[in-house]
Length: 142
Length: 142
Length: 142
Length: 142
Image (spheres, each protein chain N blue to C red):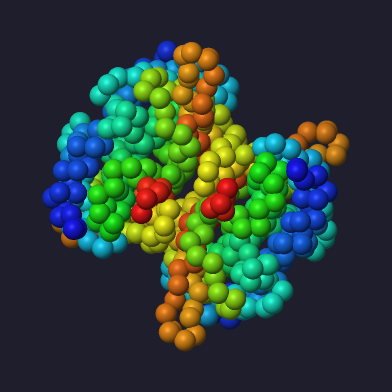
């Protein structure tokens, strides 16, 4: 039985301590993808007025987890095996969107891509602020 | 004038919000390296009793920053350009050590390696729990 | 003045020794992207009948170079700064397509993504065989 | 029964087409490591007089393979799962050394680090020209 976006958000906030801290929510999810969100709070800002790197990495990691669970169901034992992030632009001091896609689902590994987007309220256009790839090691008994 | 380990710890805790959360401290630092520490607290644990991936990434990021500043002095404008982490073993529920080395200091980029180590109180041996590489973009006026 | 796909192919085959070996050609190129091709030859096959990893990496590297030059014109001094490849499926023993996109063009770095695709002659569908990200250091006088 | 450096070199030159092209040899190997070499030839040079990126990637890939086989014996089915390279300095037009280390040997994955070194005949000092990490997927029946 597949999980709703809301259920995914609750599962991850309960299971990953930092997810709660960054106001992690799942906007939308389905077979092979999840669109998630960091809800902005002043507490996450570093001097200079931008969201820190670790905060962006936490969002990317949680969004990959959401995309994997949206695809294969609840897997408590899945663990990140590799994560590689390239920071491209400073995000604006606002919400951050993560578009996570499962590019390949193998028997033992799920390989994902995440695009972190900073929406511009005025223009309605999103700026790509970071690009992430990562692998999840899947539990053996699948 | 070079910065002491204690000054580096204070600078980073003040500048990177998540550094404070993970009890980030600098044990030792000098030309081209820094040995830093995440001071364990129950709050950082995820279900299953291990330190989460984002917490390890935050430690690695802060320790690269420490190694760069230990080498070239205080640089507020340095920003992480890329970070790639491979998770190798589950860390024990205790302090985590980060050994950060500057492998190459260019005019525009510093390239660093970090080894995250989980010390075993009984045997005195460290387990390599994650391996990290990363690049820092340095300010233009160097 | 922008370069045609054919000019890009010639420039890269002349400049990168291995490009010639893999029968590198540029099918299509424009602002921010290039679609390139490895022309299959028996010589490139490793035992087991598949294209080796280094051959795929050479194609990815050359296709990023093509996408960068299609965007900013001929730059002989651009050098790859980082390349990260994830091998997802064994490619079929046939041509290999590379879709390279410039995700961000900064003053000093171009960040690119490449998808290596193995076309299936029967179904007409492409299989994603490898995913690549990479950075090009651009010459200083831009 | 463990493989000698010479046997490893022969196995890899026979199995990886590009290894032959770069004059790949194994200088030394043992539990968890291999020191390998690209034997310089004018044919590998790109305009500007330096060894191309793909040639360095081919050397790194073959040297990881050597380190894995030096550790667990001959495994024909092992395939590179991920390779990430950072180019740090232009190599001199001469032999290139690769020091490959197995940082973690799991049941399903071997994680390796490779340092590409350009020896300076006059000073006897090696320059680190590239840093590589990579994962090998190991055959299931180990």
